[in-house]
Figure 1: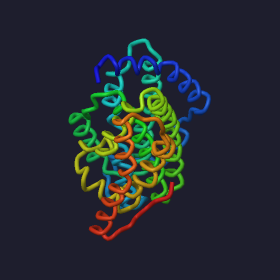
Figure 2 (figure 1 turned 45 degrees about the vertical axis):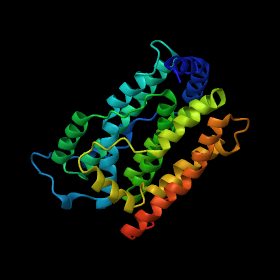
Figure 3 (figure 1 turned 180 degrees about the horizontal axis):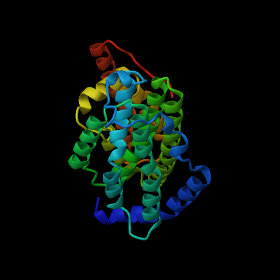
Length: 303
């Protein structure tokens, strides 16, 4: 389809964006990370160098929080990606700035907790941040439907991952912090889910193609993080985020909430895309079962 058709779809959705953004502002209550951090526990790393024995939460919880933090650190790249598709001065442009402002607190909050509570090696964390940021994040989303299918899935996935990471810390402060961050991700998910629903209503074939292309190759935006594969396997084994969690808590809810299986009156291309999407959960579950067989785990965390 021509670029002009993509542009026309984005332009046609601007009233929907304004409505969803107004609902978001009414729904989300701003919170302040500094109210949740136990600052009184902070100590100088110069006078008292970090040792792993100082950590207060288990290793898999620390790995989960650090991986989630490094993912959040890449916010400038996510903003740049969204900004490529947003007409300047539009409601889309306003949303991108609002979303970035709200997301900006997440990395600050998690880093403050980890450093104050001594649940990370501060030198390794900073080296990993530099490596992650200099690697950057450059996904190949050539169509708006792919981008907003991805943001819908990614916001829901980070909600699940943050919430589950907080749970396995068995630490009240970390749990409350990650609960607040997960709530933000849910608010953002509701916005993007609504955008994608409007795309489905306006142009089913274009929307379904974007969803299928995205879901077939879905990855959390952390593949450039040092040791990403090793760390992602650890959090998968811990049940924080793995293929079964993705199937149960991201893919299936999205297909249901968008009503993909119930869409009627589709043309031949859209019907083919619909069928491929409805077959996708079985493919993902097959991969989940193979992972569990390989690593001897069927870890699933509730959300």
